[in-house]
Image (tube, rainbow over the protein chains, first blue to last red):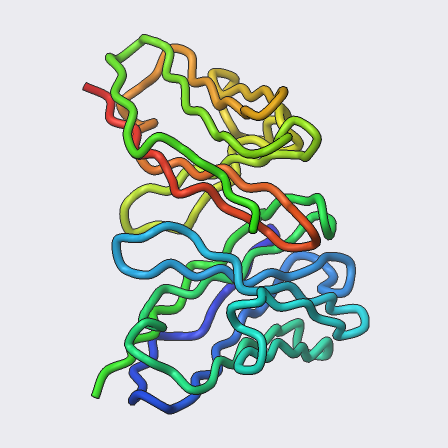
Length: 120
Length: 106
């Protein structure tokens, strides 16, 4: 069964960084892209970026350029997402979602989400 | 930047047909996907490549895409179909989501 399991909730101070993980199981991580999508409380879905686990190449949404980093560890089938310079506006549930194709594809499955709370 | 517009809410009676639209410039030239999200849960793919249902998604879910509008249709809507629905497409190598539509089954 193909699934994505994400790390637990985080609470961070403004200005700090957060690193969350997404572990894939049931398939070979290098054969699919991985996307990160976030959802602020009561709001819609917002795409953050994509990583190709086969070579580590990434593309980030313009909004997150300069403070978002996606990496992967193929030995543990894990993708990491690090967001720096956090503000209260970054409080959200962060999802990883397997991408079927780049520039045209869909997302399936999704991880269970990681709640990141930014508060002083 | 590219935008996808959805109605904030749609209401439907049980067993009736629900139609949720997603509008964007020349959207018909792009593949559209649809996701269902229930409170406190992760999104679930219900339609991809405009009209293809993933394994396990009921046949009552269907999709189409032409011109500037993609449409998700739920035939014989059931109470279990209540939730938020999001359309998604790619534009200029980035992903765009619609704002979401809350489906209420009255």
